[in-house]
Every structure is written in C-alpha cells, then in structure tokens.
Amino acid sequence: MYALDLNGVKRRPASTGDRATCPSCGCSMIAHVGEIYCHHWAHEKNDDCDAWAQESSWHQEWKSHALPERTEVVIERNGKRHRADIQFLSDDVVELQHGTLSPSDIRAREEFYVRGLWLYDGSSIGFSEDRVHWGRNGGFWWKNGPQRLAHHRWPIWLDLGPVIVRVSINVVWNRKSEGRRVVGKPLQQSNRVDFQQFIASNTGAAWRPVQNDE
Ligand SMILES: [Zn+2]
Image (tube, rainbow, N blue to C red):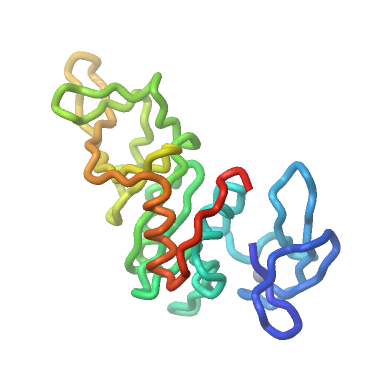
C-alpha cells in the first residue's frame, strides 16, 4: 500500500507508472493503478522482497484505519527483515491474513514478531454458514475447517463482515466419523466499526469512519 518517495515519506500509489522506493529493500517500485486489482506498488525488477507480504483490497481496507507510520512497518530481527501489516504503539502487530498458512509459517511469524494478533478474512478460509454448525453449548463444529489454525498462539480474530469474532480453535477426534474435527468457541465479539476504532486508537490514529466500499 505504501512506498517511499524521494523525501522518504510513505506514499500510496496515485497513478500508474509513478516511481518510489521499497521501504524494506530500497529497490525501485512502480505504481499500478487500475480498475481490476487494488492499487498497489510493485517491485520494478523482482518479486516482492518480503515473501510474507500479501496485498488485497481487504488488506488495504484494514490498514487504512491505522496511521501510515504504523502500517507496513519494517522490522529487523536476527538479520531478517519483514513488514508487519500493522504495528500498535505497544509493538504488538496485527497480521492480516487472507487464506491459511502452514503451521511452520504460523510459528515463524509469531516468533519473529513476538507479540500480536491475527485477523483472518473469514470468507477466505471457509468460515461460512453452510460449513459452520453451531451447537447448543455456544461452540461450533467447522466442517472441513483448517486444522492448521489450531497451531496459533496469538489470538485469532475472524472478520465475518458486520462482526469480528475472536475464536479458539481445536482439533478433536470424532468417534462417529472416525476423523478429526475442527471445533471452536467464540471468545469475544466486536462490531466492525468498533474493531476499526480499536485498530485506529492503538496506532495513534484519530478515529474516522471509512466506507467499506471505498
Ligand atoms: Zn523490497
């Protein structure tokens, strides 16, 4: 979403062909501003220098609630460099995740960034009405749910559109089907606007409502 201009200021891509510098590796970047894909900066000569980087209009929407200096924050640790999607003033990071990650990727990121929370795009990992069955005890069974989510140590929040729900995820053995099942429980719930405000206030941004279909 951001690259550095000649003055080292974070800029969003304005028009196709604009040039700027990658805040991580210092390579030249070119703006792509089109109608189909979300507006983004791409490395001119190579793939993104950060294999962990993901970008979509969903990512951009959440990042837009944080101050630019708290967004895509380059963190260097043990000779490795990665960009945190959002970093709170407390240094906790928010990892915005579209789709699932392997258990080793989950571990690598949580170890690298040390502290934070995950915000998953619920629709991208199949958290949908036809697959999530709610029980009377308030928990749910997630048909063909991603077992790898059980490897998280940080809190997991699911963006379900109007609400953002923090869940616990476990994999259990089901005797009837003789297979593993992904089950979970909601731990906390927030409406969308409150969660946007939570992101904004923890990054020092003045709260402003932003249209989702911006
Ligand atoms: Zn780079």
